[in-house]
Image (cartoon, rainbow, N blue to C red; front, side, top):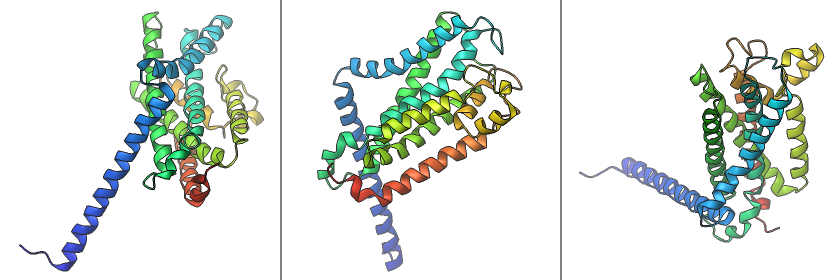
Length: 274
């Protein structure tokens, strides 16, 4: 059966889309494997170290604060209260910070025309996404082993919070990658932004204890909503007065959009050897 000219054009266009998509997937997978071997070496030990850094950071803060605070503002287990505050901070800090170097570490690969900055960003995002969830699994498993009831009453809310936190972190990382490739001073500025978010997110205290004026300012901190979202899975009715899931997801999506638009407009500069 012969196809008419319009059908032939449609089939040809679809074949080109499939070929382009397969090429992008193959490039991203190749970059992902190269990135992992370059950063972590050929053994599993390198990746274990990458997991160990945020995991150790998380454990140390939880242990120190749990023992230091004998009276928790909410609940009966200090470890759970502290962990639900620190986890969003760690999951925001490490993936977003590690994505800074996605382009800088692979500039030499732009000698291959098939590779674009977005391929590098997406491959690094996948690695950080997997690393973040590995940290969470190991951390929660460790708490269960020592007898801490880290399994929340509302698992669906907990899962949604974790995915939202990692999504926010990755979106922040995409924009960070573009800005850092243009100015190295952004690495220092970003750490300052994270510390500001950390200090106003209610990680160790309840936002309800803030003054009305400070609560109004802190509400615009997306990390605060991440903490509130995660804690709402453990404490019934928690976060009703502060939590906005729409805000944190919208904020993250705006960061992602800004990063993708920025990459498109400065792609030529991003691909220029530094």
